[in-house]
Length: 302
Image (tube, rainbow, N blue to C red; front, side, top):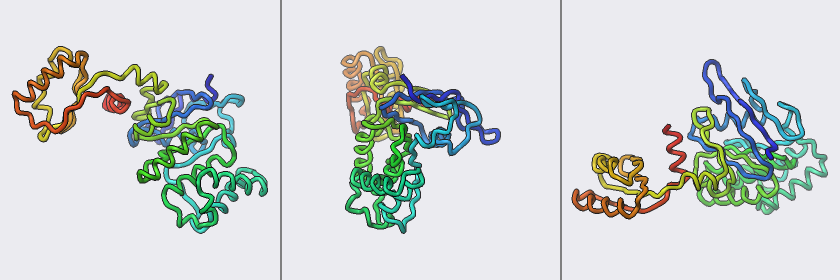
């Protein structure tokens, strides 16, 4: 049963509609990825859920509360570009944030110590935040977002600015956090979504295009596919393949093509024969299955 429901959520800035009648629900204890290209409306949607931005229309409701009630005490939020007081230590910052969420000084101190340990920052507790790495700052940002034990945690592009090591740390942390709270995080990195999320919402141009469980989307949209890469522009070389029996779709970029097929062995043999006959300058030829990324690209391109 959904514990958080969004209905017809809309945001306009003047005549421009940034989020257009978005509706979705979240089930308690699940991790949900909000996917979309830059400018799709992800950040605006999250800001409306946190009540940092007032919707033009629509309703937001959490189980046990009235529609559009003040839910800020039940929501934790990490913005895409968190800002810290760099002269503070990590411990001072978390205690400060804890008091802002109405924890007593004693509770704030205990919770800060607990979270610094959980985030792997205990050894840097008394170090100034200005000396923290990007990954450490992101973990500190997540700590401030959950210091009041929210029912819903919202993370806006939590790993987009991190190096591979910092990204790995934060993804592992999300995997741990989803055991205790519901998470909605925005991203345009498909691999991250597949790694840690249970459900997927794809948004483009302010509208929800796809919303379902990850495993359901994978089952519905995984198709046999052959991926090719060439040294020269590929589309003129394989244009006629579109008319072959067993080929359902060809997705081309400049030097790469993905050919969705229904009869793998027959099509593969015909392709290889054609590649040899035309002396196509092939770099890679790989048998695959279509992925969440392929679905994402298809949705975004319309």
